[in-house]
Image: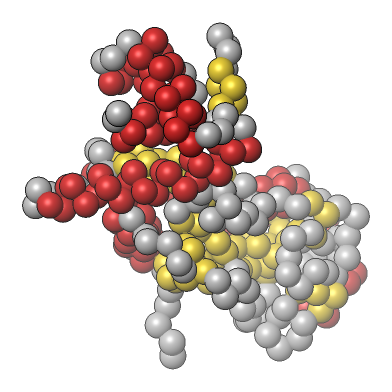
Length: 299
């Protein structure tokens, strides 16, 4: 009875979504994979997945079992590697990152990261929804902003420096605000997930702004600014190319706006696998080399 093989077949079936893919990977034939899965279900006493000719679907029991099984398999693989004196991070890394930061700053780093660590498979989930890391089996989450969950451990890896911006076309049509007190007379594009709501937190004079368009995506704010719909408060890196070209202008640069920290977070009670540690180290190094993301030393 090779329960470890059954478990491995199950985990890879979940990750590939295909029994035939698992069979090719292990070189054992699809009927054997099916038998291994049936044996595992009999052993645990629960149906773990529904199998059809088109797809595999996890049952609720299967989802829970996989979430607990995958870290155990990865820990075993890492223990064997360490015992052999190897230092090669390996296994499936699950990470999540917010949409705009992922698109502009993390996705360009994926290819060199995977080239450096050829035994790591990366499952990157992109979205602005706050998720439960343990419940959804995520190793590392990259988050922008202040943290509130004390059950998570965090490592600061960067800084999002915010600026007030508008397109040159908008400013030509509506004038350029000189101080935050001018903003209520302008159309402002509102990011509906901003922690301070419609209050823009200028350090010397927080101001309540308004406008006809609000959106829950930084990329939606970016598109609206480029279309000349109004003024926005966003991380500078989101408009770096347009600021450099003059299509977008930074407004009121002498009126400070608090920056937002960028953290890599992970569950406090979970053993952080080596593949997750090197991923965090890699992002930290790359962000530190990026003038738009690096954390400046305190004055």
